[in-house]
Length: 211
Image (cartoon, rainbow, N blue to C red; front, side):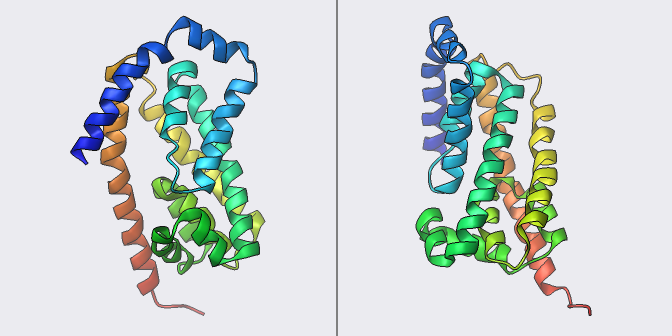
């Protein structure tokens, strides 16, 4: 883990001058809607093929568009992947989910799928953003309607997404320091949120069923 952190930090420092160069920035911005579209699709695809990391797209977007626009693009990308993942799981079942999310991810997906309900999904979208893609697949394996699922995802996923926008709004992502603070914070926050959401799921499973 330490080696990964050091490697990513080095890559960020090395790549930032290029990502923030006027030539690169002007190239992406001059492409009009194509630049943001690439970021949105990259994030969506990385969440559909869950083993793929979405951080490279985020890093490029932060360097070119800034924090506020990046969160908007990330939100749109997540809404796209949420619909696609749900549809795949609902129509094709566990075998396709296992192929796209990875065999090792099925335990997490099953944990969410076994705790079905509006409240569980709302809490999962607020706290479970590191497992956003797994939750989307899990919801498709339940009996919840798509309309309810998508409304909860849009509202509570948006709260989590834009909450992070406020949390890091004062960071300067044009500098290595800003990137490293953000990345380090994610490394600390993600495991904490995963721990909390899994504790919540265990609590929900133990609750007596009321008629």
